[in-house]
Length: 250
Image (cartoon, rainbow, N blue to C red; front, side, top):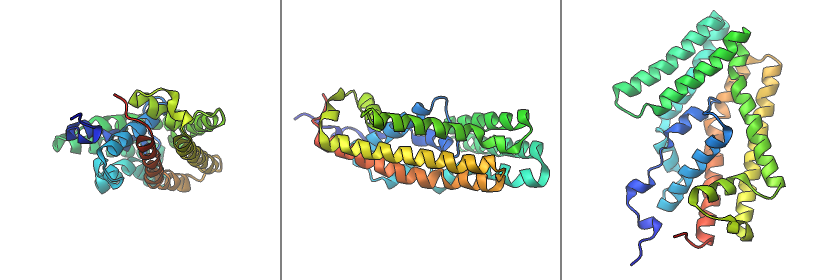
């Protein structure tokens, strides 16, 4: 009997979701489409494996993973008003380094921590070169704008980005776009991602432009993992719809 994807060995469905920790507070890998591809790829594996969406949080490190993600931004936000920009940068980098050291000590995967440290370094460089603490948050703000534009254009040209990335990852052609149920699911989730990205950009850019650094830091954290949990759930449902509605690829 031919084995289906759902019967494949468990090790084929263990997404390397740790890289997402780096992305939740605006510290990103190069290229916004890379971040979207990672989310879609991991959720596709989870859908095929029949894993519930709360398994995403477990694979991302649980509550400890959320703490690791928010720590550098939180430290920067607390230290900057009290001790100044340079001290805040040192504290944020130290927090990121501490996370990396802790993972090394526990012999866990250091890839997310290394990327996180590098991302904090980029944000710190923006702030240090300009002499303004608020510029620590600027790389993430512009990335939200890039995502918002990409999602919006993809919906307008009738090629929803989430669906396009899913099809490419799974080796499918464009036939999914001719299935109304699947097309609608990816249209909805891509449009939702566009709204979320525009909201993140507009809120955080407003706080940035009005020099409200404390609220900007709070918004960065609040609009990170909580929003990620909601949007990932929607992507999961869209992929689940596609998997059930379309014939399996060989």
